[in-house]
Length: 307
Ligand code: FUB
Image (cartoon, rainbow, N blue to C red; front, side, top):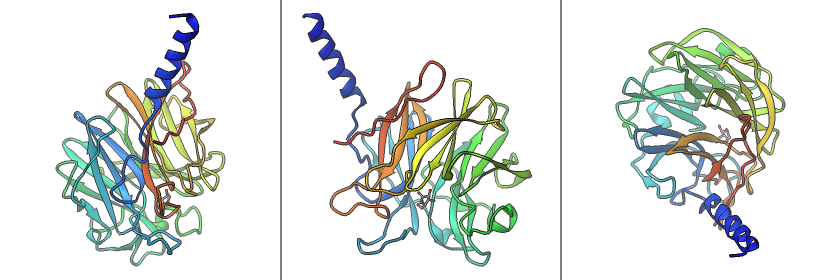
């Protein structure tokens, strides 16, 4: 081999190792992916986009769950949770996240409240990651009346949950502003005050993760949405803005991310609206791409790949 052919071979190998066959989920339209690594599998929770092609808003009545051992082959499981499982809610299975604590699985969801004006956050619980999940409280965990931050009715959406190394759990959420609060050990009650974080052009979709000794707060930035992020040495901040992580995702005005490490590789999971023939902002599809870190802990921009 000449040194030139070795260079070409290594470029080809790198390109191939980055490539994924997106969308990852093709049996249904899915949005707002939230991945959970548990034992040797990844569980992928997502909202089911049920809007017909001529309906130009979200129609979402249930959440779905898929599992995978390799991030490529995804097994679909029975519907684990519906809006109707929350008797106090009336519609809108919007963004959510599941976390495990002491062998129980807690699923934080966004729904439209039946009596309190606007979106609220509820929590369901199960003994295994595939459910069945049941409403843990019989009422909302967070409502618009509690946050008292803005008059918009969709301020309390998009929960992301994180358990720090000292065992303290935190819930972050929000639209227009990012809020956070501690969760009690039981994972179903807020402890103390609700705090508000200032982040440039925050739209929605916060996701908290930790990699090595850095905390990352990624979120949907502007509208149509890109994904940007901030970093901190502490879960309570201060957060330093680090810029754009992912560009607008094909044909979708939202771009909702989930970030995990699995079997030695980091992944960026999101949705786009590019599925043929009828994909779009309300008929989204979950995609998976690899994520890479720089030596200083910052994240490299995502290279979105398709088949
Ligand atoms: O899927 C409904 C809403 O769209 C989510 O709650 C937001 O994050 C955006 O993706």
